[in-house]
Length: 117
Image 1 (spheres, rainbow, N blue to C red):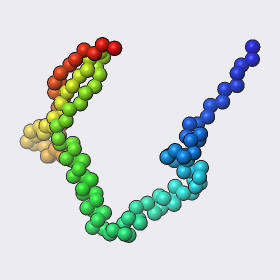
Image 2 (image 1 turned 180 degrees about the vertical axis):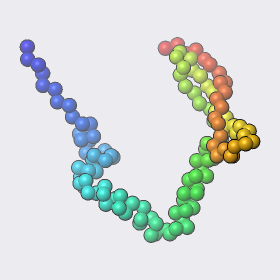
Image 3 (image 1 turned 180 degrees about the horizontal axis):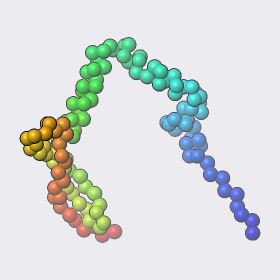
């Protein structure tokens, strides 16, 4: 018996219009990424200035802190059970240490339902 010839292709090479590093490298060359690294963010800095860039970073940090400090509900499968639980931020009391910057997320299980597959 003859063995069949199997050729494995890279998926992103077969999709030239797909977003990704390989498609851009194939169309523009490897030097394109070096040029991006040299001048990355410089055009935005020139256009808007230092105050805008600092405010942009501050707003991003505030948004991340807001999302991290809000209680939220998660649902996941645990074996054959669908578990619904709440993640609640909690700052433990630490009198002799420095102040915590991030809360400890405490998971409280709300419900557990058996799922038949």
